[in-house]
Length: 202
Image (cartoon, helix red, strand yellow):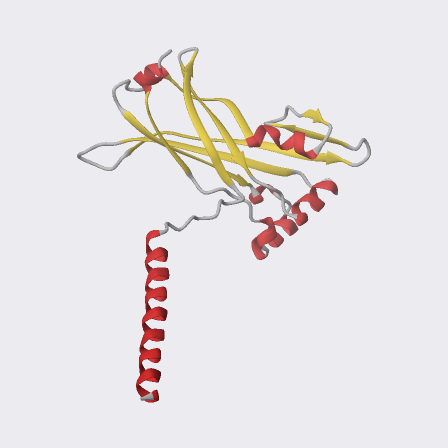
């Protein structure tokens, strides 16, 4: 009867293995997948009202590639552009774009003075390090977008924000490199946010 004992042992092994596989599959089905955080992302957007205007603050996480950092140390100006769009819903037609604004900062390094400079427009101020020069882009503060009187306090508005390295403002040879290589690709996905002007009133 050894063959019968062998058959029982074989069936028992199959049941044990099958039960274990079923349990692991059930666990894999019930456990939610955790998506990895993007290295470039808008972490938080906060709309608020002050002085009868609508403002936003935005905290943004990003790092420069070795190629971008090396080019900056050679004196290549870097331009970062933040884009914001705010829309209102219309049940009878497409959503209406109420606000569409962009703001660009320039970061440049002077090898002679070993000093970084950063600013928007023609006004540049000195900073002691690259990290300090990138601070205004990583922590956008008091960005004025509209006058409150032009907005409906009862309307829900849908906004979104992103930040990108504006390669269109690079010199022509570097624009070609930016198109051909991913090392010059730096852009966050859009970050969505909703708000009512009436709820933001101080």
